[in-house]
Length: 110
Length: 113
Image 1: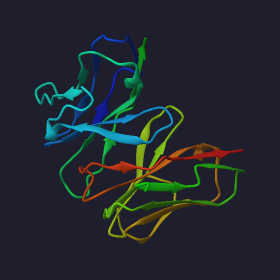
Image 2: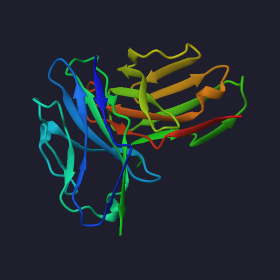
Image 3: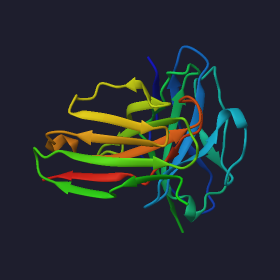
Image 4: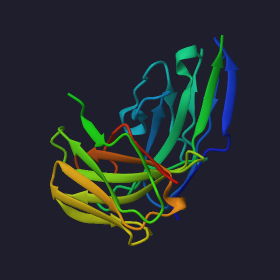
């Protein structure tokens, strides 16, 4: 069964510290993986997807098929990074749905 | 120029009532979705429409009925509201199937008294 696990509900760091938000997935085929972010009082928005291999707002995520992980990393956290982060997975079939993890709240203290 | 817009933003109503939430997207996308986010912030898909055709219908009570009059609109009607329906409902759209990036609305916070 498709599943996305984000083990941390809350991650608190100080500004300038490295950040790693963990995401593990379970999927039998070739998954599409995403990170979505929801800033306070704002809509959910796409942060990055593994296929594009981009770095957005200093965040990167590498798909590790061996460990079935897609952890989100940033070397130096900023206060404006405080938000709710969701890892999500989809298959590549037309009827596949986006499965979200339970989310991790990142708090960056000054 | 909001891409995905939902109305209303807040909906407070009593148990047993019937209510609707509207969603419109101006991105030209052909696929639209409804998600439910519960009090623990868990986000789960409810329905998906592609070109006005229902393609995903999760295990949702049949009190919930989506309607897509055209590609740009996907409304959600809920009959006989229950306390457990209290949540934030998000509409989203994408071009193509679920693995394409999805654009979300601001959400509708539904509170049942």
